[in-house]
Amino acid sequence: MPASQPFGTPEVINQPPPLPDHNLFTSDPVLTAAVTREGAGWAVERLKAFGAAIGGEAVAALAEAANRYPPELKAFDRFGQRIDEVVYHPAYHELMRLAKTHEVHSIAWTAPKAGGHLAHMALEYLLVQAEAGVCCPITMTYAGYAALRKHAVAASWLPGILAASYDARFIPAPEKTGLTIGMAMTEKQGGSDVRANTTRATATGEAGWCALNGHKWFCSAPMSDAFLTLAQTAAGLSCFLLPRWLPDGTRNRFHIQRLKDKLGDRSNASAEIEYHGTSAQLLGEEGQGVRTIIEMVHHARLDTALAAAGMMRAAVVQAVHHARHRSVFQRRLVDQTLMRNVLADLVVEWVAATLLVARVARSFDEAGSDKSAAQFSRVGVAIAKYWTNKRLTSHVCEALECIGGSGYVEESAMPRLYRQAPVNGIWEGSGNVICLDILRSIEREPAALEMVLAEIAQARGGDRRLDLALERLKDALSDRAEPQTRARSLVGSLAVAMQASLLLQHAPSAAADAYCSSRLASDWSGTYGTLPAATDFAAIIALGTLAE
Image (tube, rainbow, N blue to C red):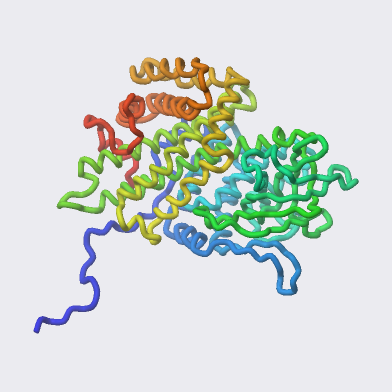
């Protein structure tokens, strides 16, 4: 009889090693160059520190735990008293602590010099690669500052919002540091059509305070310390600041009906809530709610765009790492012609997205002192949000396919990344809403479109394909027939031309040529892995390769 063999696989071969611990910032040549070029070179050491803190297995384990054990609603205490609290896994709180102590939420506002929004963009781009779920409360806190700073409540709230600390306790704001801000806008019957909101606000007799009655269909991060929310007054839709705790130290009437069972973003709680005589302070003028809250929306859109670029980076790193260590038919995957085409195409998409969001972030920094930059930022951020998220879902899916079956199982990071991919395309305006917003913006403010076209024209003469694309784009924009029917086509063409221009100016020539030869071609299908045979695949893939 043959000698008995031990149970199990005697030797495991041809399996990629775990992704090595690495500094998420210093290992990213596109981001590191963009940070200095676009005006936040002073933040490099902070970015290095954060990239090192979150780029290892320890934080990956925190992210896995925060998603495996999602938040739970505790509506009542054991005595039957309504408390409306959400309980998170300790891993979530540790991730929040890392983000807040590294000033992801506040650096845009506390920066020692110009470039704060760019530094914020870079920090959150890194954070989303470690764990995307905590980015929602971080984004809302960052964006909430933009809306609150202009109002009388600023003095009492902004110091806590800016604090580089995190306090997980559910206690009144004056007793804690490291406050977080949320937002509750949409309702069952309206969704993006917030003017259809039915929540009513009634003056209480106390200056500036109202009692709200109604509901909100989506309220993310419901354990935030306060929320910007919308309600109808006699003058129309108005904006309010709603604290979870009232000035006298009692709980506000903030009833969490249930938590959403979401496709992704599972470490972050999203809730359906009801207001029953809930106290809130009026922000801005009555009837001007959208105008008041739009600053928060505008800044949140920057994060929904940059998150897509960060997730593309995460997908590229996983796919290239796998392909470099896995052999099929006696050759490494990364050496096989068709796989090289797919990997290079994924890298080109990530490079283009990162250059675009960095450029838009710079316009946020310049907007306060430059009217043209403000005009560019309003349209540019919407274009970036629309296009990067439209490309993201197929990008992550293609990266998962490069890995194959082992990328499809939950032990891999890819399923979580894949489930997360659609959320930013929906948040702060789905594709149609964004495209229609852009049409309205350029109709109302033609100078904003001129700024975008001028940005594209900075690379004029650098590549004939872009020159021709720019002329086609101008012809399409001048055609007034059925603009809504063509809205997605127009916005997509603007985004591609902006990315091509940025690549020609700032990216390695191999990546710029690959982008122009594919995305600017009349027969481009949008499918990854269709770059021309003459592409310098090795040079492009190197951008997504970790040093080992």
